[in-house]
Amino acid sequence: MNHVLAALNERLGRLFGDRLVVLAGGTRLAKRAHELHTLGARHTLVLDTDDHAPLHDSVIARWVSLGIKGGFVAVEQRRLGKLLTKPSTEVRAILKDFDPDAEAVVISTPYNEISTFQGRPVLNARQHKWVELENKTTIDALWDELSARRAPAMVFDLDFERLWGASEMLDRGAGVVWSGDGPAINGGANFVRRVRTYEEAKEAFDVLAPKCDQVRVMPFLEGIPVSVHGIVFPDGTAVLRPIEMVVPRRQGQAKFLYAGCASYYDPPVWIRDEMRNLARRVGEHLRETVGYRGTFTLDGIATEDGFLPTEINTRYGGAMVCFEDAVPTLPLALVQVALVAGWDLGISSMEFEELVLQAADTVRSGAVGANVRAVQPTQVDERRVIFTGWACRLAHPDEPAHATLRLSPSPIGGRLDLDLHRENMPVGAPVAALTVAAFALADQEWGTGLGALEPAIAIEDDVQVEQSIIEEAVTA
Image 1 (tube, rainbow, N blue to C red):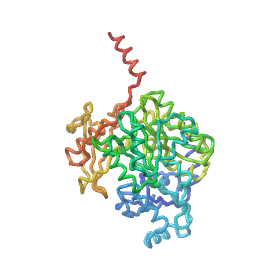
Image 2: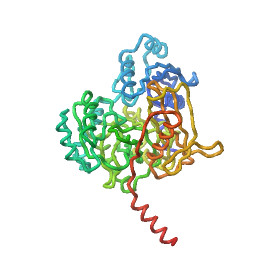
Image 3: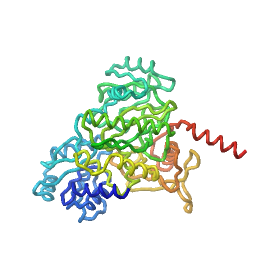
């Protein structure tokens, strides 16, 4: 597939070659700046929301640390939005010095809807009609329009008694899930609560009522939270592999802990096919109805009844880092920018799918972590760890580790990350249980205060079970 990579890089070079580029916020900014340099960008100005600049090559990029990182995505995006619409005198001076003729193009975060920055076009600005599709209280209409199987659900205004009544009606024995429509940026399970008792319902209502207009009630679905990404091209939709959303449950609490994503989990083949088929249909629907271009995520639960969808996110999702790691020579985030900007990439959706899907099935990775408030570290502390079953312990100095636990300073206290060592990680099983074990060790070692957590439980793969039985019979 070298010819596909070559074609992509050639077309991206036409878009960014000999251009001044402003990176206004975002993640992996050093990587983005290097990619732009490789594609021939004249120079890049990085406006980083963090408060310190990493080591970087000034020939490749000019780095400005803004110090507006908020610890939470919504807070950071609000501050970044203010920067783009009403920049300070200092930022205006930096921008004018970098680009006196206002000829630069701007790339902002996947959440951004602002189309210009001081007269310069923001190439990846989202259209509002795309953003509206992320509303969890209205998405069921899409599943019904596509005749997609889904869990039963009911949507109400903020009326507690009606919400509680619906909860009693829809509860299958494991409680229900309340999902609020929330503000424009509503990710990471911020407005999602599991409700099993009247007390938990009151607690969930108190959280959602000030921020939401409507709440969706759905039965709690046992299984692994999964996401599949589609990338909408002019000619069709490229569909990638399932990604596990690592979402431990807090024992005795209604709130979930969103802890990132990983690509090690392989759902049963029939569920994988179900997910990918629905994602392709969703992508075609988005292209035909709202003129969508670029990446979207289709999220849901891999249950014993199959894949049941819960929402879509019409943006470059955080789990795309798994695909970036699988194909490091492909500037995926810039492909997203080009598609949203309407740029011709010179390849078909199927060529792109074949390239990325094959690599991602071969090379697995993850981005697992959580914010913690109980500690305020002043420096980075790392511990190499070993998994034994569902337990986690510190690795001996001469022992190959399965992962590294890292505690770092953060604007809201601390940041806990679990870096899984790809070469020592098994493929196929979800990492939720490993994450719970590692976070328990972090509580023990650092006092991170995450508390008792429970992992999501994967359904058994009947094909694998059947194969195991056959192998045992042959051995016997």
